[in-house]
Length: 327
Image 1 (tube, helix red, strand yellow):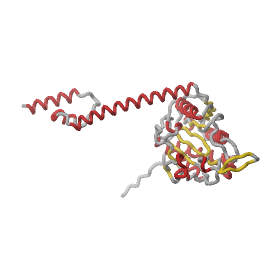
Image 2 (cartoon, rainbow, N blue to C red):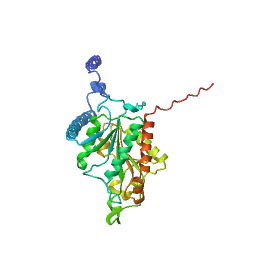
Image 3 (cartoon, helix red, strand yellow):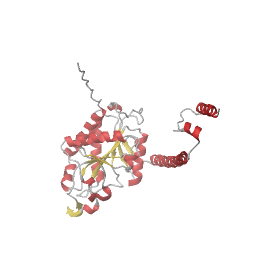
Image 4 (tube, one colour):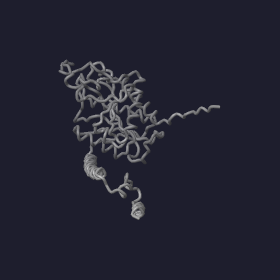
């Protein structure tokens, strides 16, 4: 009799269980009661829920901070067309270049210029010229919704401004343009045109960075690989030093040894953007020979062409698979 009562109770519990609720071994608990492991699991679940609530509050605070940054933003958008066209799907399906919004971010600001080249030229100047050319070439290639982001202000606040603007404009892809240097301990002294300066001819080459914490890391990595592949196809080599212990805090995991894609997980503009995001270190301006190349129209043409080629391939439909039928 007690068995039948238990079965009836279990059936009633099943009927009363809310739709969509799933708890492993809940029926076993009806018959046997909760054991110590189940109680421990329940306590752990409560702890997880508390942690989730804390994380949600933290994310809410960050969203408010990002929105405040956007309201105070001094970011100039150089673009044609409406700021808020319809949202596009960011899946693996081919995109329409004319509607595909690429945010080309000029790394650093006038107030916070980034690295200084071996000839005392601020990185921001290199970034601005290259980013402008990349944006123009993308528009010429059909990506007419491309925006050039030129940010003002100090270093850290400007990072959140970039994120806020890119998120607000609902960009489909974020590309930040930078030029590379080395840690201070690797610098050597020299003079250029009578002024003291520093250099390091030890390393050269480009690097591509993504964050594994990005909202769409898979797509970020896919585009980063395309950029690296296009750079390599044009005879450029990536910088290998980021895997070396000598880089100290600037050592990063190499995700693709063929194309020079590294993980820079904590970088704000890669982690907090709500679209695929890639940062390109176009080359070293602390290397005296490479600085001259990076300052040339020919090198800017080469890199711009590589980015456009990557964008075109990114938006191209995948090749059709041909099935072989055995007879």
